[in-house]
Length: 219
Image (cartoon, rainbow, N blue to C red; front, side, top):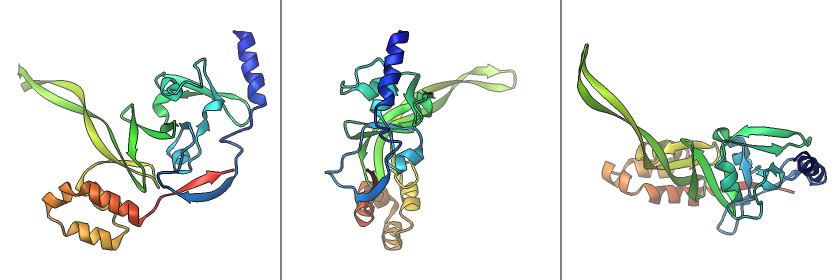
């Protein structure tokens, strides 16, 4: 095992510091042809800057050529990687913002990695929401007693790419997100409550068309 670890360190020393030593080159407009690099976004800033830890720098006994490699790494409680100085760093998976596998983005929310289905200035994904329910359990000394149960249910979310902020998918939050576009914001606010809810996805897409997403690219 010590020999294997030594060989791993030796190999790392000769791997280009991809994801660490790269210099910012330019920004590209996101479209269906844009391919995100596979890797792990430790923080939301890494995500915003499109600067993940390349999977080649992750220290794992798993097969890196497996298409589910990063999913397997992120299913563990912890993982380690080699930083720009060649030092091994241990990370709690629960603290990771997200990752990209085979060009698909996943974001960590409520301790669950969800696939980002729509990418743009406003992203969209379906994740999990923790729900607390109080069930009557008879009378206690001070009155009715309740037993609290915890469950999860599916919930739609917005992910604002420029800030990394995650908000529940509803009209109130969309109004906050698009308020910088005065024309579109006014148009949406003038809709009835029913139409606001039924046209959420339409106005999210419309905002993205009017505000293209520019992704940082590195050399």
